[in-house]
Length: 49
Image (cartoon, rainbow, N blue to C red; front, top):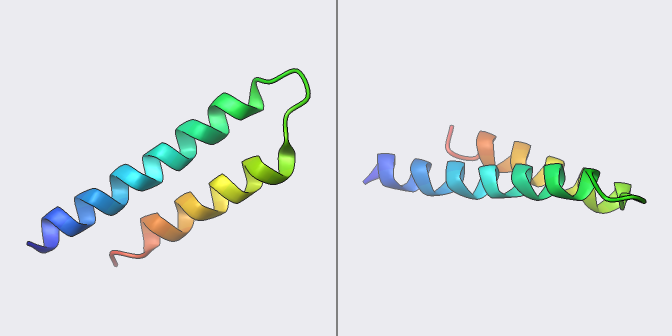
């Protein structure tokens, strides 16, 4: 059960990072939004511990 919860949080964190990577490639990247996604990813990676 705990592994399943951790797995879901890690998947969500990966999605945040993928979003940030996608956005950084824009001609005029929205840095505030990118920073938000990075912060959310870190928060989600640390949450299960």
